[in-house]
Length: 111
Image (cartoon, rainbow, N blue to C red; front, side, top):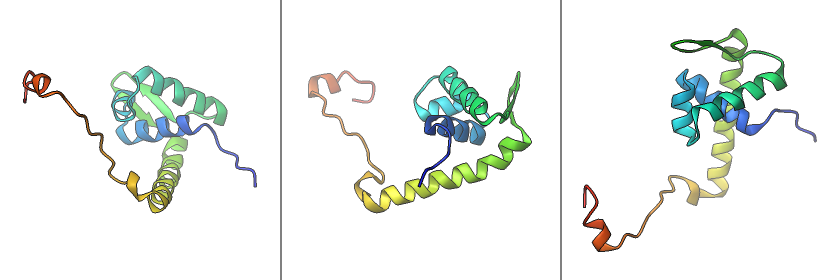
């Protein structure tokens, strides 16, 4: 079976930006720059041949097409998340642990 869908990075950028109605907030969530989110969304829009957002001076507004697309894209990511957690439960709630030398830890603001 051949799947026809655009870049997953573009879809992730769109979904986060649409939830927040902000490239900046989406960028903070995704760990990239607002410019990177904007470019990913722009490439997605070009590949789809539609505008997903109206860019306003004070933020973003979903177009009719963007508002129609968002629920299905979000649901697709939910399905992928559930499937991944089902086969790799260790990924669920994974946290990063760091070992820090006690001398360094004593110099940290909360140390």
